[in-house]
Image (cartoon, rainbow, N blue to C red; front, side):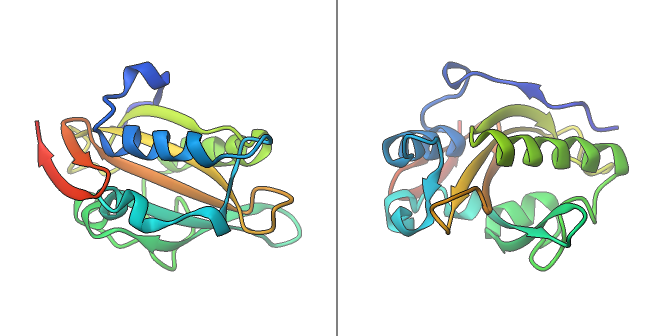
Length: 168
């Protein structure tokens, strides 16, 4: 059974973990409101993280906010055992894990502040795997958070800014 994600501070995350690398990049580019402008995002600057990156578009149907996955890095897809592209957040995971993650995404959207957590994989066959996760607010419109970038990788993974992945 998945465990509730535990909030981390930046100092809890190894700087060479994919979340640590992306957090450094994010902090360098986030504007005064706290979010990253999509137009400033240059994937080549964090190529070592791209395999662990998922991008979700904030979609609003007039009643509720949902998050549609528009990009799922190959390493993340392998880890989760599923390519989330085209699915709404929570559609292919246990209900409790989905509720926690939707709540987290909504909080990041409202506060324009990243969320850093340690969690088990939301998959009954793989929930023994501990992940470090970073949920980052992004704005395509430059007025509000309308996209979320999620970086999630096993705790022991290390990458460089410009590519390469290895366990530690």
